[in-house]
Image (tube, rainbow over all chains, first blue to last red; front, side, top):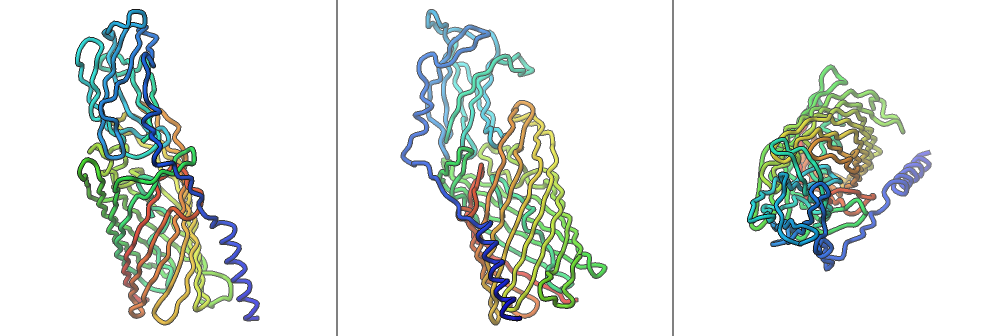
Length: 153
Length: 283
């Protein structure tokens, strides 16, 4: 009887282990892969229809796991490529869709006509993030149109 | 065990599973974020240090013979490498438990285990990542939601072997977050945890192992951030060595690793060391 109980215990233990404790299968990202290069933005990559205006994003320091970054947004007319002023307010937000959480507020400073400097760009954990560049109504910050730029750190 | 970015206090409750009247446990955990798992299934090793130290005081007391109440008070310090080092410390999420021993083991039945059912309450005393103010996220020390859970622990000793099972489900309540980073209703949903453990004792020593699976529903947001989110899943494997000083106190050392078991998804994987000292008072 005692021998039989022992066999049952061992059998149940194996069932638990086989059924539930399968090993994790890591699929590590190649650490030499430069994700940042995927975010390289070509001329007139982005467009706000409501203003018929193109814009580029020019990175200063690219944000990383521990680095705070910055970039400039340059708005210009699609036809003449001349710098063009926005007629709406500009808003930039950072968010992580898989976790539904934001990163802290960036600081936006106007440099010249159609050129803005975005500082304090930091993503507070590794993963897939989105940079939301939005045209908003003054004060209420209601979104009029937005362009989302994916970013991975 | 911490899950995902900001911890989950539901998995291992402070419940008396022995025949004692009361117990108090002090533990210290040193955890390091080792990698992140994304929604496309890729794993990415951390290149910089992200360290969480947790000091936890847990206490539980029997009343009316088969009822018990318990509390878990965690204090946490987080450090992160970021053009220098940033750190934050303070209270993490407090949890309260109320348990009832629905299956006793008074007759030392050959197979039937001791069964304790419990209700668990999570208090949002640790700031959530949505309410983080310092910019780096290290001041997020909890999930930050009110929560309620129900679960059961089953234990059985076949000297010198012992096994245990803990199964729980929980619900975290939505809340509105309004600050300079976000103005949105955050909707966390349901979660569940399953822990299987076993051990072998000889003289005053015990060698044990356990695996804890944790699942959390996607956390959605509706407001200035509007996303559905993605579910989170992680399994923690632990190896525990403990020593029984006398009949009423135990010290233990455990190694915990979230990179070994299961199919982790949309989460940060930690490796940690836990030191533990427990005192018990007989009935």
